[in-house]
Length: 521
Image 1: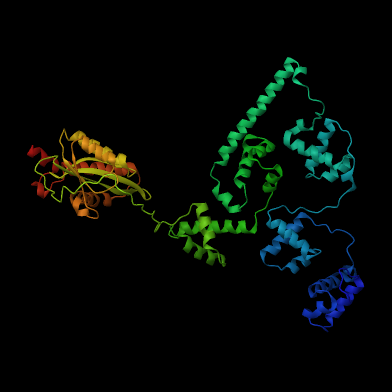
Image 2 (image 1 turned 180 degrees about the vertical axis):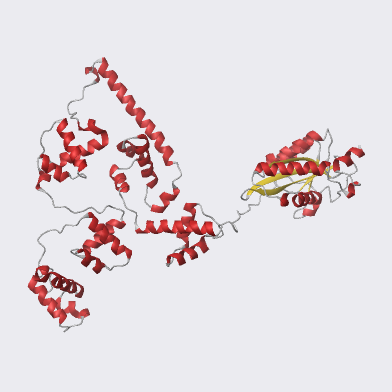
């Protein structure tokens, strides 16, 4: 039999009999008869179901409802049915038709039902009055925008009904008024008409400005989760348009112009259905939040990917989990990646003049200073800067702040200089960036103070200060938990007052630091 594209019902029946005879294996059937075995099996099913009429060539388009298309696509995407099963279940004309529906659905477009085209859709329009147009529009809206039926009932054209409904949806009853005619020039207007036109123009400009301001505020809002889950371009823009239309009653057309998107693209987004991939992402996100809460945040994205893959019984890429965790603001509480330290060159370096000579004969003769880190709340950091007098071990000044920066150290130094009453002590520190800065050098030089610095990597050169930090943390900081910065600040203030006035020390002959200083004076 010659190879060709169309066959009569009798020829199809003959090919079915030849296929059933098993004279040739299925893989060689096309070579001998020019028809694929898959096509003959489809004809066989049609013959067994509808008889010889099922093999007749279709006389026209077959029409499918929107519900049938959606049900067929969802059955196939569920994985419970093969392509052939779905075609037979819903009596679809061919596999290419179903594949087209699937492509449309996965492309986030609407599956619209196919209807028979009516001759009335090409009917010539006729003249109507405002009351009649309003009646036609309301009838069309009450009947789910059935433009063909409305046009046929009222004997107007399809395009007229479509345009009237469109204008009514945008501008209400004013959109149905016939405003055709020549626009008057400004010189033809009366003063009253000119004022009315100017006022209307100002109102339109004001409305546009309000819409622009509101739109850009909305776009800057936080919608990361929704935008990242659906993976549709400009979702944030479309969401802003939708909210402003509902909340502020701005025109969709105006908002689309401001956003520089077409109105059809917005409505396409508005009526879209979530894809299979989006639904899976939503389910993954729900399970990730549950696991994060249940396991108290110990899962990073690598182990989270293992848990989620087991729960869904499918291999899920770690990058996908990482992206979704970032979208939901979920991160592990353990082993956070540290920022790479960038070593900087010191602006000023001093010699180690103190040289571990930690004894002082007089008050305000030798000071040591340093900064230490403390935590409060959920791993929030605070920094304590202090200056200690080596004569009696008292704290001359201290400042607690939330940033380890120059102002923290400079404020501590300023307080100490003010309390020193003209004294010019030697001040020793490590080589932190605050102490090697030009600003610290200028302040010490202005106060006639000598500056000394520890050697690199030699913490013991500043031993008394490090010893005080250990004492403060063991006797106060480690004994309690601090939820707020104010709680920590109050605790530090209480302890330093206790340390200076009431903490008795054997090396000070059983006196507190300030008692020892007073007795010496």
